[in-house]
Amino acid sequence: MKIYTRKGDDGSTSLWYGGRVVKHDPRTEAYGSVDEANSALGVARALCGGEDEEVARDLLALQNGLFVVGAELATAPEAADRLEDGISRVTEPMVAELEEAIDRYMDRVDLPPKFVIPGGTHLSAALDVARASTRRAERRIVELKDSGGLASESVLHYINRASDLIWAMARFTDVADPELFEGRGETGDSGDGG
Image 1 (cartoon, rainbow, N blue to C red):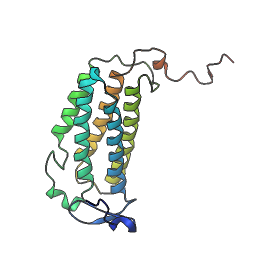
Image 2: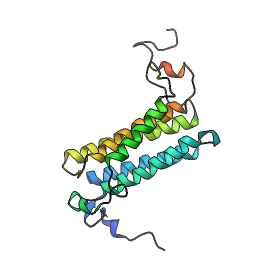
Image 3: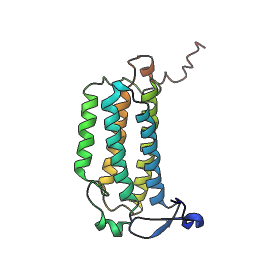
Image 4: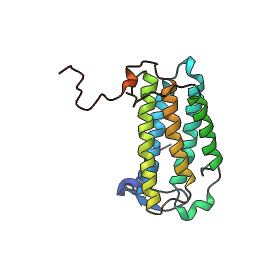
């Protein structure tokens, strides 16, 4: 099976249910950024060990949800009526599921007093990279919304909660090292005593 079609050689790409857009179109940027975030989540899931079964399961569910986000974003608004709830269209119950997962993790995490320095563990660091990628995807989706290219705001609600969930999982899988949670020092404090 050949995976190349040569149709994109002119700098355009196909949308679901018809139409073509340039590869730098805000729609393509939005679903491309979601794809990047999903790949980063895959790296994090690959780092899960036996003690991280819950996190691995939730990451896989989130990755599946991001495929739904991508499908909706890869569809022009005029074809949105052809999408299926939970399969190719994000629903508010999907958003509520993420909120339940966020609460489940945060019930077991003590919030740090300042910004967290990423890198407490390999897994939490990978999750922080995925979270940052997800926030970039959110910015691209907001840009698409602002240009009138979003058929439903549920997709924006979902991606916002997704980044919150990833942050909660990162803190859950982080080490309880107060030094990592000190965050930034005082302004002008170089930390070298001088």
